[in-house]
Image (cartoon, rainbow, N blue to C red; front, side, top):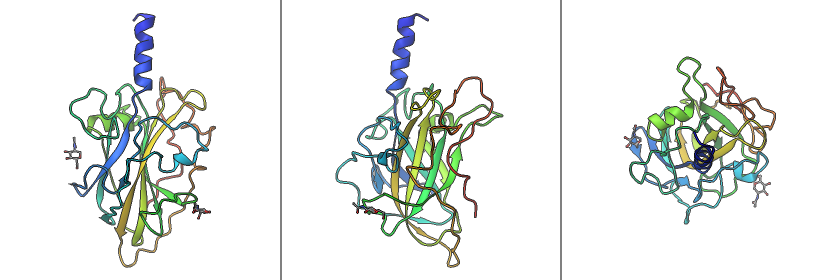
Length: 239
Ligand SMILES: *[C@@H]1O[C@H](CO)[C@@H](O)[C@H](O)[C@H]1NC(C)=O
Ligand SMILES: *[C@@H]1O[C@H](CO)[C@@H](O)[C@H](O)[C@H]1NC(C)=O
């Protein structure tokens, strides 16, 4: 490969971000940007201390006031596409450039109101992660690509009823051999979860910013020649 071609490929992958812009609940698509705070830009956040690391910034206006009803235990699908516009047709870099590698992670935080703008100081718990499968050598990003941008996981069935924000994140690791380098892409969806009457389980929580550190092994890493990968953040909550 010529040095120029290598450089062009590098620049190409550097600019290929992704945006979580729609949610399905038990297979029912809620619609593009409905109940999801969709950032207009697919540019990565790299600063782990940024307040934008919570739910992103510069949203499509007006921000949806819809709150998506989700029964606890439901299967939900966060739909990622290359840009904020959603799926625009066949694109070899949708939902991400397939040479980009990294985990896909989902968190929930209980909130007084799912439409509240203020996301400072929320208490998040991780409900799902898709890192590097040591057997298949597939990353969460590979599965996202294979599934045409769909990240599907289950809402825990033991949660208390109430409003929640759902934060789904892809971390691109192609430039993560030093900090800052890892590229964070996320949106938050506005949920009303209906739990079981006895839903009184209190998951342990973390904050954003704060859950990730520049010294975490899953934040500073090579994607080449590794057989295991530690997804950053806390353990996945189990009922
Ligand atoms: C947002 O919420 C935090 C935590 O409750 C609070 O400290 C802060 O004052 C709020 N910010 C605004 C602008 O309301
Ligand atoms: C992704 O999810 C959407 C919405 O639920 C669905 O219409 C589509 O068929 C799914 N695509 C794949 C490849 O699973």
